[in-house]
Length: 174
Image (cartoon, rainbow, N blue to C red; front, side, top):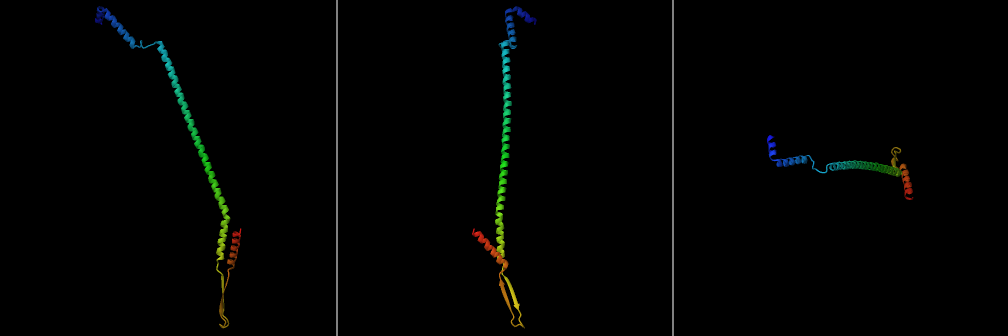
């Protein structure tokens, strides 16, 4: 250090210039020359305020978008649920109407089915074979012996044939 002081005494101009340069360098690195002083600090405060406002607006917009999307999803779910309920109701009504139509058709066909069964039964009875009766006589000591076979129509077959005739006349003459 003694050498530095003795050199500065021998070279006063160079020592003064060196001291000034070193002082300016220290001030520069400390930010003294970075601009505007308090004006810069005010600008920094304003930019920080507006940046905070922009961030708050962006977060508010993000919350609003999330709420809108949630409401939209809820509305879509509600629409789908209502459509499913209406679809189920329509199909149940269609199924009920189909069942009622089938029942009505069965009920309207029942008399014809009964009549068809009646006609079939009458046809079977009408086709019964005639009644056959045989009689034989031994005569007196074998004289005049003989046998006689007679065939008479079956009375049930005759009645069934008459009923069939009445049914067909009523059916075909209407």
